[in-house]
Image (tube, rainbow, N blue to C red; front, side, top):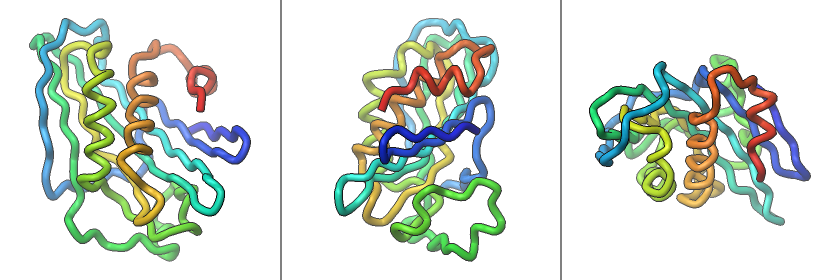
Amino acid sequence: MIELTRGFTKARIWLDNLPDFCFSPAEVLEQVFVSHDTYLVETRRAAMELLVPHGGYASYGTLGAEFTPNTSGYLLLRIALSPTIPALWSKYDIRNYVSKPLALHLDATYIGLTRECSEGILAAATNGVLPLGSGTLYFHCGVYELVGSSAKIFETLTSYLLQLLTLSTTITEEEAAKTIVF
């Protein structure tokens, strides 16, 4: 994992592994896209956490995905949704996690993805999944806040993740961080 700070904006990037914010879904949304054969030959994983202050409040989200290539000619987009009423992730629960979210002190923080999060993921993925080629793209790792998270922050995170997933497999996290401009 690499941490980035640009002004007051903070981010974390994980390549080829996912933080321990993955969850068991209550439901999985799926959409299929016609695609071309992929140039990727192995499963790729990436995640990003983003905290963007806006005066008196901040936008926040963490999103992780796994892309498994195949030769089907289709890309299956899968988005895991957390239960409707997830358990509040308190500051006391964090001792069980290696990766402590940037936003714990700002808002009620939850592990999972809501329907609102999925709207942002789908909006960005609809415009950006084709470079991946055929396979399965599964978003199943996330953290959101009650107030600070929105479809827009998850659309932004998805755009960044799609960039990260298409990078060379030999690139380091430090080199990947240079490709992210926020």
